[in-house]
Length: 390
Ligand code: GLU
Image (spheres, rainbow, N blue to C red):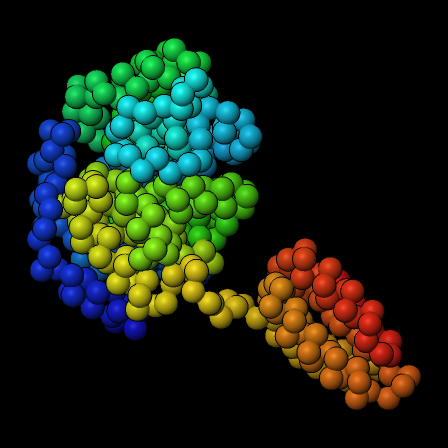
């Protein structure tokens, strides 16, 4: 077992004994699950899936579908348009609260049911089947395999979904939903009933972690900006009315669902997912949260603690007939640009008067605009001849 899988297995063992909470029962079909299921998976930058526990068990995605349908709609309509129909503020209320903005009828955010139904209402298509297909295609691209709907859970959701229907009727009366209510809610019920394993969720999380590119398939699923927008909303609204404390304790954008899944994203590092059906009073998986929190602690993943720059530019200095060449590769962000400048300052001050320094940035995989502006302007202030090749 490699060291990271061993760490996952250790975390799983440490929290296994916690049997607090109970599986969701408001949708009858969800109550039939084995409450002891426990699984955990991570996917890193090279797309290797590491998972432990019941990692082949399928369960319905439920609310974890919400950020991905949001991504789907953002990719098609853009942020400004989406924000006219659904807000981006944490509601501090339970996921199924009947609360809409006064006057406009806009739901608080796309992670509570009302907001998610409004978001699903924006998916194009003439009927439930074509709308579901368009959602399924996007979620499958995020997961890297073809996903499908659990028909029993769907029927159970639909036959007990009056509260969600009521929310949709209210929103339609405000013009937040254009589609007939049934089109929006039945698509929403089907989207919640899509079957996944913890491995699928870890891959889906990693696609958000790596700017919209699925690291397993190598396919770009959404633009980097869309992934960033989705993660921003997950950061403040992903864990129902526990989102603030979750950010405080764990420090990672996340989303949970009532079937016991939890997915979290460490940008540029890992996609993480856990599954355990027993829920706490907020509707979040008790052990799923504990798994992600323990991993975040042990690996120092909290977003707001100081981080070592993930990829530093490699500074390689060589003498050529054109002058001294300083080769940069990897990612050039603000902190990295500072480090490069320190080296360049030394080299430029020590160099003979007529020496030429060539900074070769052609191998930089990624540059941040502000870092480039800072680097260029500082280079001009250094003594001697310095040329920057991009
Ligand atoms: N299908 C569920 C509902 O809308 C999703 C809830 C959830 O996972 O939070 O009731």
